[in-house]
Length: 172
Image 1 (cartoon, rainbow, N blue to C red):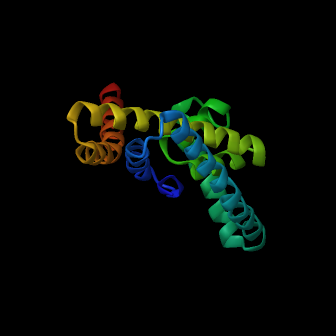
Image 2 (tube, rainbow, N blue to C red):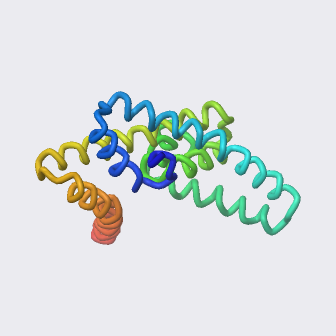
């Protein structure tokens, strides 16, 4: 159930709970994949509804156009917009719903859009799962490992963003 939480915080807790109950990493990976497939079938109708609203409500249509532009800007650091690697990295760096929305904005349909989004999310899952299990083994404390990973999940992207900003200012 923790894997169904559509934010990364469920991963460390779910992985440690799975390990405590004797589940190996392949089983946990499969459960996480299933949670992504469930998410796809729950989120896709919402995405379609938003598309219909954007066509009928002018202000919402403007919002949708602005969102497409924002996705292009988000994709720019990953090497362009709309390409498979770019979309996978968006799902890895943000979440699968944003990855799917970016894939839809790039013209990808249900199947290919979700394959790209789930691929990025599964890569994220593997990174967090491995870090959680390794840190838990090193510290000997699953609780401490979980909290450290959760804090790192928040602070590392902020630090990377600030470093990128600092380096880009130096180049100018």
